[in-house]
Length: 124
Image 1 (cartoon, helix red, strand yellow):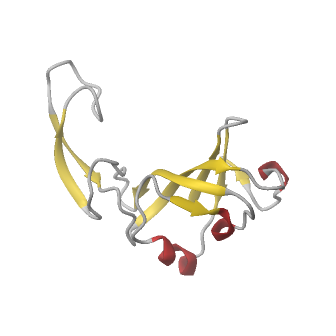
Image 2: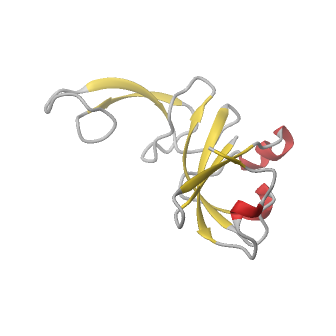
């Protein structure tokens, strides 16, 4: 599943990705630009901003790996506890693998037709 964010309107759209197309996303990283034709959006350019795995672990942009890791985080990034306290959490790396269930995308370049006119999109 792909969640596509539209920065102009502030809306998000949910789009299902077939399994055969999902395989071609394996190996992409957070921050990579993807052509919109992959999601049936001709003329659009999208950038990967994150995602989550089948188990529900979020992707983290500063881990350059494909699997899960347990990292120690402080208050500033990834943990909202008291200041000075650190916690060990499990996160995924920034590389898309076969066990990613949701990919978050942001529109960078718009195509000729507005995203709202697409009939098969669902607003999330």
